[in-house]
Length: 128
Image (spheres, rainbow, N blue to C red):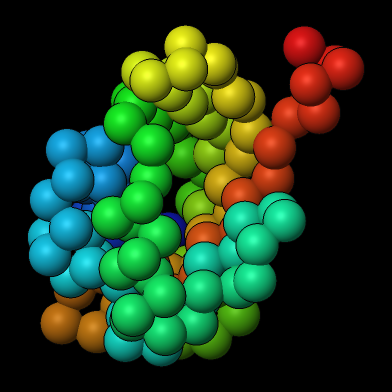
């Protein structure tokens, strides 16, 4: 079954806010987009499973700009859940390096939509 239009809009806005707030180092606003038990999985790092670990990651993220593509959103396995996938380009403003990859997000609807899990995959450099 398709995600309702109003949910698709709310999830899309959530994903855009995620990129914007982390790029602008608005850490408290960024943290408010996540469930308390959210997990962030980045290749080469231990999964971030606590608020303290997620905050450290956000505070130490390189200065740059995320350019997420339009999300593909579908209903999740349970009521009030959804899954979103999107490609991204990250431009590191310190090193000039450009990184390509994909997000796979699990989202949960409570009083509004929250991100409960983000898995990041990077495009191998030899493929670019």
